Image (cartoon, rainbow over the protein chains, first blue to last red):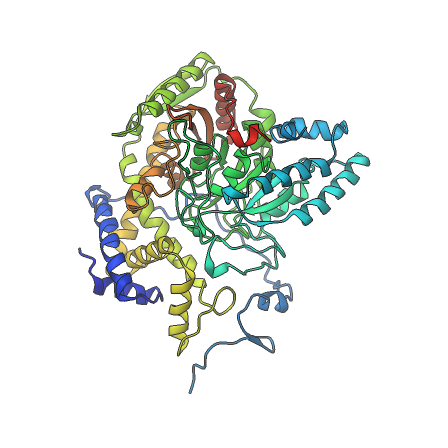
Length: 95
Length: 494
């Protein structure tokens, strides 16, 4: 496994983070180091071991199926960079 | 008068308020003054003195009517990861620099309802990602402690809850909230000579705490002593319908139950925690701590946690994977920073490039890689399987002991700038706190002594899941035996 600049570029695209050529030089060796250090996990025999996703042995409970959004449209919009008439505004998507 | 109010315990303060030896307003004013005097430490991102004084007036009215609440007027510092209604909450990130929540986190609401008064929102590592509080967009926090041998050095307070730990250590607040994903409450408590506790995963509601790694994140408590931390955790804990992972377990009266002696308790010493290159001071304090617990009537037993060496790399797959997913929400649309672009995709990319700092980007990218097609099983699923083995190690160990004693961190506080060139070196600072986090177990750091530089070192006690009582009991016994009384100069001269 090797993390070269083109791999970092692909990851950054998946993560929606713009990276410059300089960024690629900076992150490639770091990500490479971290992931090769994590390679030691491969030496552990995990045959038949179930992945542990949640340590709390809590079964999720159900709530009553009722509208409970609190009718707080203004609160939800309060921190938006741009809004118009109760909507979030983004750059035009459909020509 | 000033210095006395700044170093009292919660119990003493409540008694003093009740007897009208001082008022809530005087108490809060003194702490605000100390916060202002300590601005050089950069422990606060947002100070809230007006709000605090208004609340203090309410507290005084309650005290006059004999209607004191559990933690009436106790000065609190709130980690800036807890959403506070109407008060800017930044996660120490540029991307949330101007975010003003319209709601209050469950834990901060509970603390407020119990009477505590928040004097400010504390600095932290950006999105709680870091172990030295040097990744904050608002600059690093300085530890109030100074090294005897090189007093000119500015030391880190630990992280990620560095501002909270520094605030309590410097006498700015009596209590502070933290969060703990891999050690972010326990490790800064050790670096700052105070108590820091992370409860069992699910003990406190995570609702309104800005998410980092959801299967690991828990609220934490900082205090000047074990009893205060137990009183605070009791208020913070409990089921919350808004967090489906918060447990319905009854919350015990930790502070009342912890005073029972520890005769007959079995304390485990994990042999794998004697890591290479650990400073002699850390080893000595650990051995001394075990001796003290033995003298108090406990039985010391050697235990084995065989997968310890894999805990840190496991964590650095699991936590970034969850972070990359959690932080996908910061897209410049609904809240937070927006940097325009020619289309939507470019707007996302520009926003996230400008809004996140280097460590956060590093972790998002590691996480994205580990979750991407073709690598998911090799990294993420593999790490989750090893997480199970680590959890099983603890389960087996707790067949032989009732609590586990370890150092909290492999070193005392280091200088700002040290270790920052090498992410892995920094990650290894959490080598003793991460295993319990992966297993969801409660842990507490108690100040246990000073090293040869005169800097505090903590010992960690790990308990069984949901058995914070035994953890607090052991911590209290250790605290009594250590009788730690050192304080940084800042608080002495007040």
